Image 1 (tube, rainbow, N blue to C red):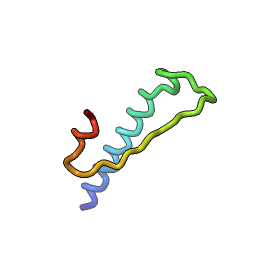
Image 2: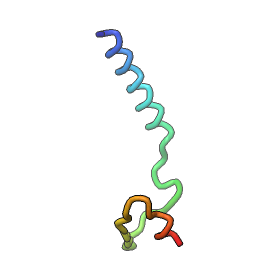
Image 3: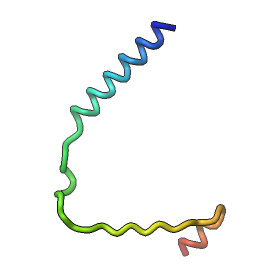
Length: 53
């Protein structure tokens, strides 16, 4: 059991290092002071296609 936990921690550490080294801040967009509007719609189950038409 202890070996399994150790393996999981090592794997999590490798994934953290890989993701941190490949991430670049503001590569796809530039930060701005612009406001963003988000519209949220509650959709009844199995009626998604009715809302998309």
